[in-house]
Length: 257
Image (cartoon, rainbow, N blue to C red; front, top):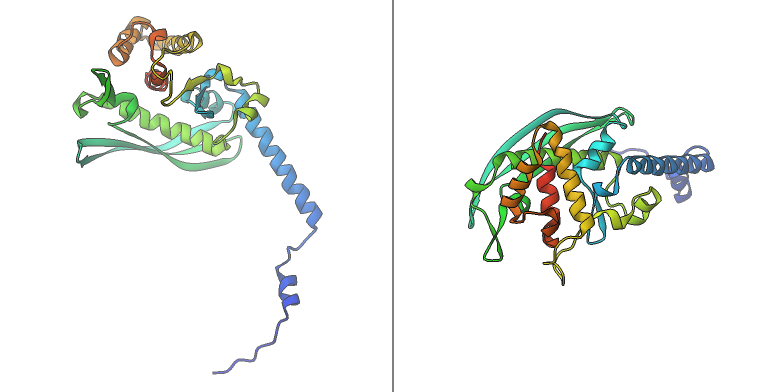
């Protein structure tokens, strides 16, 4: 079967591929959208405090407390939550993973997406302990399953808020423009000299403040300190080793009031 075809020149093809409309107006509209996006980012960050951010080797990460501060003014909602557990096994033995999936939306931005968070029974925040000065995994049956389930939900929530609002991979230079001082953020260093030193006084005060905020629902500070001692082996927040600061923050955040 034969078809009649009309030859098309390269110039005609290029003309067909050119955007239709006023290009300067389109450029202006894109620039305006980008400027609005940066204003939204700054607005979101300004609802947080320095203590809501963790400095992990120079990269700022938003914690659950910060995500919660942002959630209300941006009309963040969590719907259709589904949580499930999957049991696994490898050469180290049996373990499990909790998954939490939900639809996270923002009324202010008129947007919603599905996000997921996970947490394993081998999560270093809850499963690691010290034996003769060495970090080892607790037996699975000794890990508090409730904490693992709650952490999966928390990870989903943080993932939803940060991705929905574009708050990932920010810099401390950008946070400084929003009033967040890097020196006041919790800091986590991995390895290197001084990793076994205790945390600073400011970090100790941060842990105390976060622990105190959990007493509103009836959990006494004495109970929290007792659990903290069982977990980290210290009576005073300020006696915590530097390399366990992130563990301690996650431990306190997981306390539900």
